[in-house]
Length: 178
Image (cartoon, rainbow, N blue to C red):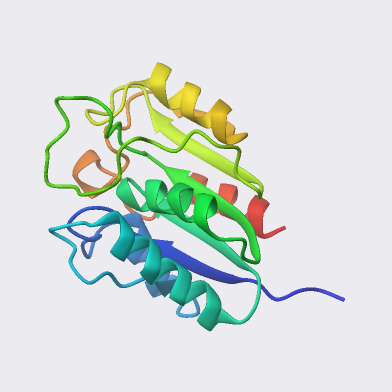
């Protein structure tokens, strides 16, 4: 018997625009559901975690989470607070909110959670991401118990960095869906 899995996408700050790989995946897979946030431009961790929890509960089945940037950190914060039926998570370009130079717009996302995630996960980082250096990304992935994938020159792994449909990311997601 195959267990159905729901894919929930979690964009980061300012949402994912029309050419972002998350949006393109959602267009190609209408069954994927974007977790909507109260405010995309004034992120408050407690609000974002609550929205994620509501989406997981509403799914009423096991979920695989796909977080980009602050969405990836939302997943890590959620995992520290709730025990839910999460099959796995693809955590793409998590930002280093602990860096004092990080923009102060975020509320409550510091410090980066360092607890082992209770589900399989893959962290994808870039060698030239302006929001987190690859060494810190590797350390965070290790703390989370995540498989680590490093893309050399991928910026923040978003549309601004030239990422469209991103088939490599879809293959990683397929591994988690299993």
